[in-house]
Amino acid sequence: QVQLVESGGGLVQAGGSLRLSCAASGNVFSINNMGWYRQAPGKQRELVARITSGGITNYADAVKGRFTISRDNAKNTVYLQMNSLKPEDTAVYYCNLYYRKYSIPYDYWGQGSQVTVSS
Figure (cartoon, rainbow, N blue to C red):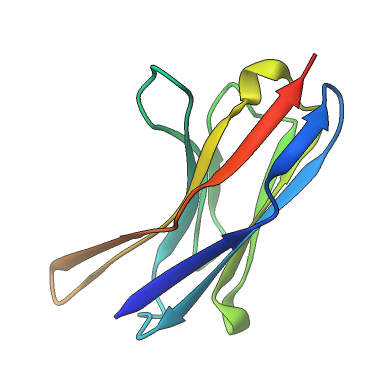
């Protein structure tokens, strides 16, 4: 079984920065996508950023130029550096690990980290 453990959320003023981390443990297939999603109150969960095991990234338009996703494959850890935070970035952020092995999809989620940006 795979577990994802997140850390790094918190309260920050607008314009500030936070860094989220997510470590995967267990039987993790080496070729995978890791990413961050967020869910604000009353809204659907949305993709923030994701990165393949080869380092290819993509971002939501709302965070381009402000957030940076990175990963350490040796540690099965993904990071999200969030700069120039805005109140609208306030949400619960979830780490995600996805891969397919022998055509079977595997989809895992972290416990969620609250990020609150005050104006």
